[in-house]
Image (cartoon, rainbow, N blue to C red; front, side):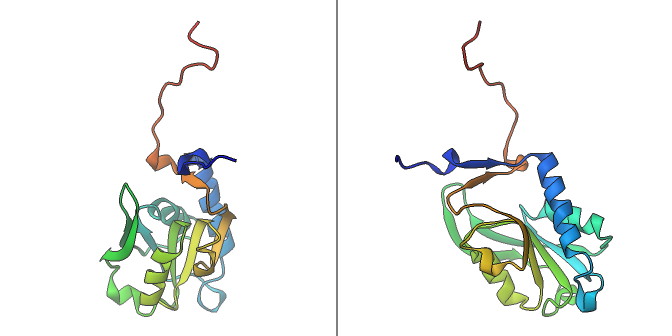
Length: 167
């Protein structure tokens, strides 16, 4: 078996799929806020968590939406995560009643950092890989650790030549 590059074992997610999966995440979270009631706020982890956080907030009628910006990747490699923008402190407290949403938990390093800041928050992702799965409370789809997920905001439509040539 030959070694694969990360993009060779790809899971392509369309806008329609992320919307369906985001709604499924909302349905799974409905009624699981504090004391079985609504969530106080949704916090999306930028950048990938913004779309699913918006979908969850819309579906669950949550009007307080904030972000936490964590940088843990550059275009070449994964780096040590660091918070570059925190959510509003008056909303967050220790995280009780707060729903923190991201698109994917991969190694779990980003969620580990955010969980240390808000230990009582509920962490939800649309997709989960085995290494990071222990850091997330709720997720929709698990993929293998060596699968590269292509999100629609990272892709562009382009012409592809037919398999059998140009004629």
